[in-house]
Amino acid sequence: MRISLALLARQLSALDSRLLDGALATALVVGSWAWEILEQGKGHPPTPLSMTLTVLVNAPLTWRRRAPFTVLVVSVGASLTYHFLGYHMGLNSIGPLVALYSVAAHASRKATGVGAVLVIAEWTHSSANQPGVALWSALGQSIIVAVWSVSTGIVVQLLVERGRQLAEEHDAAARRAVVYERVRIARELHDVVAHHMSVISVQAGLGRYVALSDPATAHTTLGVIADASHEALAEVRRLLSILRPEAPDHDDETPYTTMPGLRSLDALVERMRAAGLTIRLTVDGEPRTLPPGLDLCAYRIVQESLTNVLKHAGPAHVDIRLTYEPDALNLRVTDDGPGVVPGARPCGHGLIGMTERVTLYEGMIHAGSPPGGGFDVLATFPLFPSEEGRLT
Image (tube, rainbow, N blue to C red; front, side):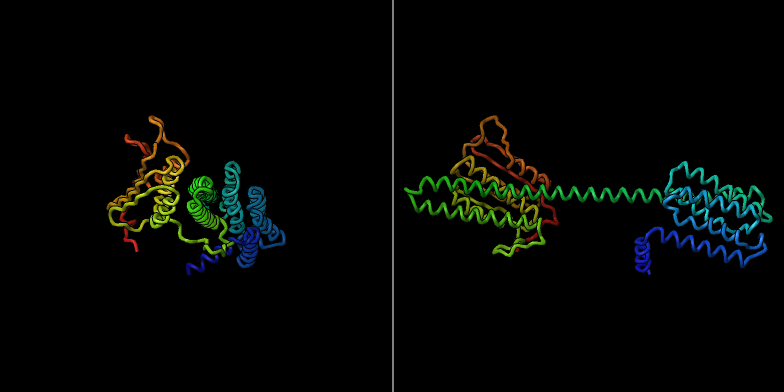
C-alpha cells in the first residue's frame, strides 16, 4: 500500500499543475451544483444566475498558482454576490478558502494579509446569515479557518523553499565532488609522469654518454627507458579511463587494472636499481591489507621519494623501511646524497603532494636533511581496527 501511494504521488507530481487544479475546480463546481439542487430550502432555489456564480467562485482555481491574488479576488467577489442575493448560505465558501491558501503559498505576505481580510469578511457574511448563528460566533469561526489556511500555505511555501535550497546544495556538492575528483586525477597524473620521465631522462643521458664506449650499458638503459615509458603509458591510460568509462580500451592493458600499492614496491625498486640507485628494502612487522586509497598513498610517497633521489642526489644509496605496528604504519625513505643546503627549507610540488596525501589519511610526514647529510622522509599513518587484516 505504501509503495502504491508513493508511486501515485510521483505520478501526480509529474502532471501539469493546471490539470490538477482544473480537476479540483471542476469537482467543486459540480459538487456545489449537486448540493444546491439536492438540498433546497436554505436559500433561494437554484437559478442559472446562481450556477453561473458558482462557476465564477470555483473555476478560477485552475489558475491559482499562476495568479493567486487575482483568483482570490474573483472567487471572494463571486461568493459575496452569491450569498448577498440570498442563495444557499452553506455553499461556495470553500473556493475562497483554497484561494487564500494559494495566496499564502505563492504570493507575498502583504497580499496574504489582504486576502485573509477578504476571506474573513466573506465567511462571516455567509455564516452570520444562517439561522441560529451569532455574529461573534461567525467572526470567530471565520478567523480560525482563515488562520488555518494561511498557516498551511506559509508552511508549504517554506517547505518548497527549503527543498529548492537542498537541491541547490546538492548540485553544489556534486560540482565540488567533480572538481575534487579532477584534482585527484591531476595529482595522480603528475606523480606518474614526473616519476617515469625522471627515470627516462636520467637513463637517456646515461645511454647517450656510453652509447659508443659501452654498448652493453647503453642497451640496458634503453631497456629501462622502454619499461618505464610502457608503465607510464599504462598508468596514464588507466587513470584517463576513469574519465571515459564508456570507451574501454581493448589494448593489452585492461583499463581498470588494480592501482599500484605497497605490493608493487619490489617492481618499483628493481626499476630504480636499474636506473642507478642502490636500494635496500626492509619490512618490519606483519604486513596487512590496507584500504586502497591509503595503500596507493604509501606507494606514491616511496615513488616520489625515489624520484627526488634520482633527480637531485644522483647514484645514491637508499634505505626504504616499512614498519607495521598494531595501530600505525611507518614509512621511511633515507638516502646518503648531498641533501639540501643547511638552513634551507625543502620545497617542491612533490613534497607538497606527499603532504596533501598524508594529511588526507590523518597521518604525519617529515622531510628534511638529518645532521649527517642525505635526505630523510618519514610518514606515519594511523591504522584503525577496520583497516587491519592479513595479506592474501
